[in-house]
Length: 340
Picture 1 (cartoon, rainbow, N blue to C red):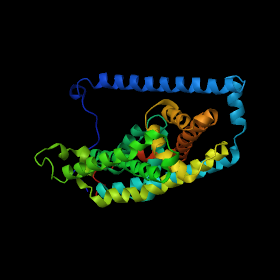
Picture 2 (cartoon, one colour):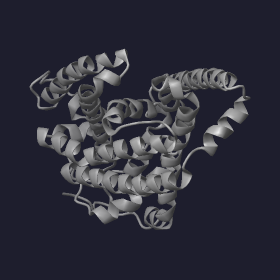
Picture 3 (cartoon, rainbow, N blue to C red):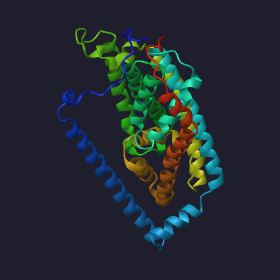
């Protein structure tokens, strides 16, 4: 169901109506994240070079030795299974969110859309979500801005879902976490306040005369009830718990001792770092090395292959659905066919 009776394509703004300075801010953003990437790789280089020197090896010899001691076959099977499970859960979350707020659509019809978006997500996860909005608008005639609002809703919920699990992990394993993690419960309390104000605003209880909430891009938040936020958490959480199991097992395959509860304390925070748009997930790789300083080589190798294999394998899943997605995307446009 949409706020509008007609289906409109998700068109970009005309050149004369683009926000002033948007190109300037985009350039600054790219430079900022490139600087973060450079800082991460510089840090990794000196940490790994230091570890290699302590072993009396060159950096190349040191890393070759690290990779040679990984149990690759069980790791590969583990990661392939996890990637497939994540894809199924991720598609379920997207399907339910679309059904809640925009259009009644079957799970199997979302599979090629979500899978194909993984190809774009190799470069940028958020652009991948935007591509899904365009895909649904083109294939099913779903209102473009309303679908985009669902993608925003999902991104918003992912922040709080990770924060809930980060807080849970902190209380289970605070004794083995770095001192800085004591800030997690403090951040969580602040997030509860922000969430409450957010819900009150979209219920019209806060700033009732403000019209920003009426924007089509915020459609999902106007429709959302507390049960939708709770259901998102319940639907998404199996993926996080599976990830904790997979990552703790994979760490041991890389020669690093790790337990389920210990990784539960680290992983949500690392997933926050993985969402930073740096090439090859440089921020997440660096954080692994920072959090496990006694295993620099293993953690650099682990972070690199773990995060990038996951992204690339998801892209491979997308290729399996690509022909169907291409056929649906460039077939006849459906107008006004989607609604709930």
